[in-house]
Image 1 (tube, rainbow, N blue to C red):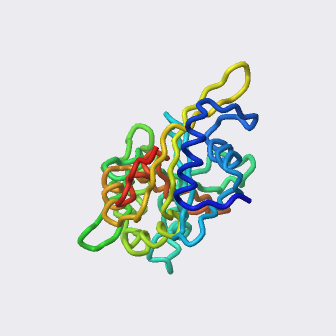
Image 2: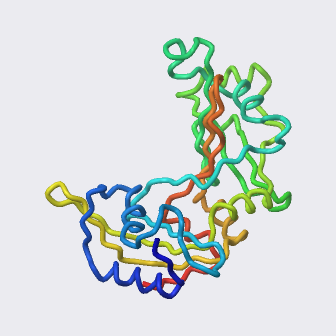
Length: 261
């Protein structure tokens, strides 16, 4: 496997960029933009061989993509309460759309994608509480779409759950350290893409060096609505609480962002 220094990697990326459009039989979807780049560099998947360097990664994305990537999974605190399956699902869930078919009639669902500055149509949002140093999930019964979910919100009120207490949350430090374990310093590559006569092409146009994951930038990204919280639980299984972001917005999480190509 090819081994690089940071300087030789930059030179190799420049040479790839200079080639212009590069044909690939892998296809030119979001997932393959990084795979093709690793093939061109002669390195193994998710293994950037730079000796004597801090942890670095190679990340690549297509231009003009709006797809979300999962940063990590992390269940909310208080963890002892098992908040999602024990409180959110039974008290705020609704009938699963496949209840009575592939699941029992009693199957419930709690699926929500929420972010700061915007309430979901079921009245949930997320806020950054800087005073308490935590990211909190908030429920406001007045924000529920009364046309779409009138029967559901009536049930919430009648059962005495119009106020969510305690609020599930993630401490700043827990979130930051979890994020830091996933997002190392990286070379971030952006490629244009096209298809001609059934064959996919990439053109690797921009390369950025991202360093020093920043707690303040992470919080600002949350407050700007760039980071999404994705709940995905049903009676039979909690698929886990995910934090997601648009690929292009990952740059906003680092203290240093330097364009090198």
